[in-house]
Length: 244
Image (tube, rainbow, N blue to C red; front, side, top):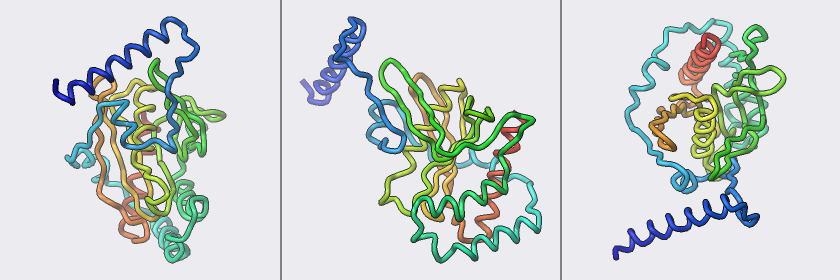
């Protein structure tokens, strides 16, 4: 028998045993739990059918927006770069968040008392099925709810200075999957940050535990031309959420 077929059959048998134990109420059965902050590509591939789609035209409507940057905002962004450019690569996660990322997000202003929507830092999120649990504290998300998060719309993951501190991409994808499933949506947007570099991301649900994702080109936030685009992309998301 082909070794690949044997491995597949053994995996299916183990899954069936787990399901039988669960149905019998076997106390030894535990649903695997994955923390967003620690999840890896290998975990995602074990849990889901997920693949990267290289067609970046899906970002056209998002990135080719006609939003204009106010001169005061441009001055703010230039000053932010000037104050932080030489330190970004040496910042730890909290330094980067407080000194550089948070001022940008606060300037975009995702909070609306009228719409009952705001930004949340380190907010808990859990997505649970009968086979696995995804849980953890989210670095940043925009969500319905003022006192507590009720419906997540947009995620930004991992304010890290380099990938040696953990790969933020699979962590973001796990959060986007949770958001799509909890909201019963087909698409959801997010972004991940490594040092001064931003990548925007779109996740699409194709079927039951089947997904594809799209990752944008790199935006270098230490360059004013790129930072202006980052700012416009965030404002576009904010407007989209507020009008949802």
